[in-house]
Length: 490
Image (cartoon, rainbow, N blue to C red; front, side, top):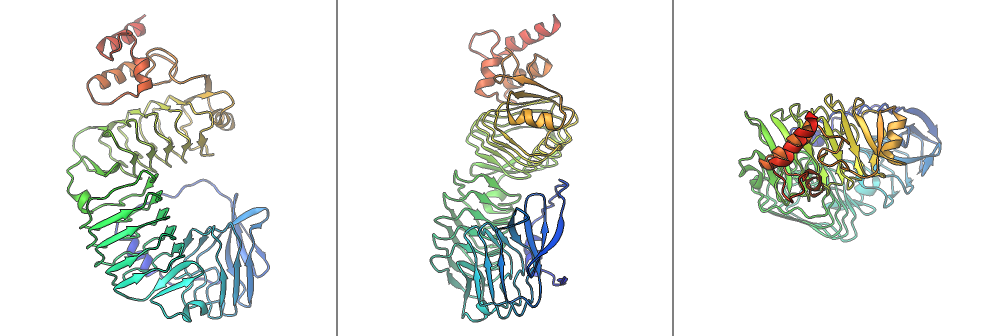
């Protein structure tokens, strides 16, 4: 098996333009190697990746499945320097083609890339016959723009559906035209083009990759299409002139430092930093902070509050739909959490390592990511009200010491049974009068939640307000908290 010693200088340079430390997910996936035809593969629990090929191969077909598992990826350098290879057919289902995957395949004249591919790595086809016999400045393989020459102005041809990683990295661009056919803009695709002043991410684009426009320091304006769902880590990092950013409602995830050091970012004093309707960061503080996300917020970006040990509580208001990966991870003083009914996704490690004692996951939540409530040592109760909520299948997803309150015949019930968790049944959320935290009982935390609501430190959801109004006078006030205290003294 070939060993690639080439350092990916372009990628390393771009990724190092912003600080991201991504922890590996230790999920315990098993892997095994094998061969099929001229190819070597690695099989995992749920997919297969092609990793190598015999140097003598002339024609290969990447199959849709091996060992009844879907083939999803062609790994970095898998076919590098296969100088006899002339034709490659990639079956539908493959989603990614790695860095240098076909680098130096000098006889490669035909490649079929299916619509399922959403990522093409840096220099994946550099040095192939296909690319070498084009005149540029933009080079294409099927409907992907894979690399370019230096140029001040580029118009990507109509019908292009993807822009490969680093395709236009540091090419001296001043203007670019992206057609409406493009769906994917790859990692570092346009990074370090310091003279670009305006970008329109138009039409059908769904994904803006990591560092896609990082260090475009003259960029004044960006238009993000209403089709975009994901903006990668560092996507517009250090675009220091960029202001007036608008995030469309279609966006469901924003990566770490996606807009750091833009004009919009740098002109805020915090502690929370917003880009349009998203919280993207929190500045350091020497004082305890009760996070009250402002009304109209739609999402919390990856790592926005990570390791902010001064955060003591967080109230997520109605309207917020997404809490990103690691959003509050390592907030070791976070001891109270209120989640609104609008929330739909809780990302990987979102609240890992916090001190939240009780959590009510509202019925609107459809997915809970890996290790979302991992190592929450103070957690005693967690209520999951959506019977079909997708809970990442790992013992680490929910803290093992927490009692689970689940609906009958629900995914939460299945999770509790599989991992041997203590649980009981709920029929509807918050059925006990005064049970604001939703753990099925009255306790001191309910009184504290009401008091914080009264003081403006946090805001209860509409459903919680109904339960909190113990006196029935239509007002949430101190008398409701007093009634809880009286009940606890009996």
